[in-house]
Amino acid sequence: MTSFPRPVKFFAASLLGAALFLILPSVAKAQVDPFEFEVYPYQTLGMGMIEIESLNSVVPNGHSAGGIGTSSGSFASQAMYRTAIEVTYGLTEKIEAAAYLNLARPNGASLQYAGSKFRLRGSLFEQDELPVNLGWYAELEWHRTPEFDDVPLEFEFRPLLEKDYGSFEIDLNPIFEKPIFIGPDKNKGVEFGYAAGVYYRILRTISPGLEFYGGAGPINDTDPLNQQQHYVFPVIFGVLPRGFEYNVGVGLGLTGGSDRVLTKFNLECERYLGALFKPHS
Image 1 (cartoon, rainbow, N blue to C red):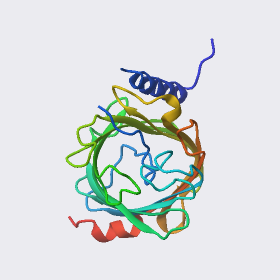
Image 2 (image 1 turned 30 degrees about the vertical axis):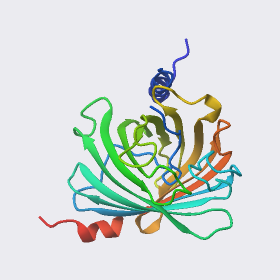
Image 3 (image 1 turned 180 degrees about the vertical axis):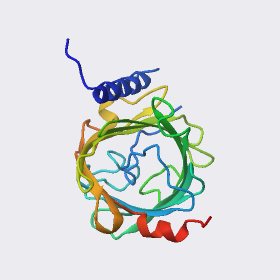
């Protein structure tokens, strides 16, 4: 009998668990957050450290009508450029806080303010104390411009799971999202989505990986498969001179409800800013 490497077994088991969850017999529109193609690891910033990150995506081959693909409003996803500026601060050694400014440029239009996000992220237990490193992520998302997203206010929660096998790192972020307090969808149910990544660290400057993003709709009444969004991103990542870290990739849509091709480029800087804000003992 063929024996697969342990990283492959772990990732396959994680995806199987997500698949079983999806088919379980509340209503909101399935979506993937197009301002944040990022998979979160277990590790947080150190206390007093600050990090600035630029998250960028472009849709070279999307949909010409709004409300489909990565569009959650009336603007079409085709030729859409999105960018989020994220500032993160380490509150403690295990908890960090972040704020995001979301900007977007629809096809042929100028860059516009699209909304803001605020989140807390934390790690549980010490690293490798458990067989799988565990963390958590809680976010409040405000969509200022309904043409980009017609749900005004949403709450999102993610358990964070991470496992290292030698040079392999595997991250899994199940995503639970619900409209809250205001808007026509405030009484509707919880959506399920996911972000996941498998990374192989070859060199500090450049290494390959695969990332996966998707949304299936309400937990108790998932959308038909051709209306769901699922993407796979081959990516490369590494560290540039002066301490800048990057992650760049091309995403391929796997269903009719997905945009056909996406590109992303994330760039973050912690090295110098962190030293300025780190408290002295």
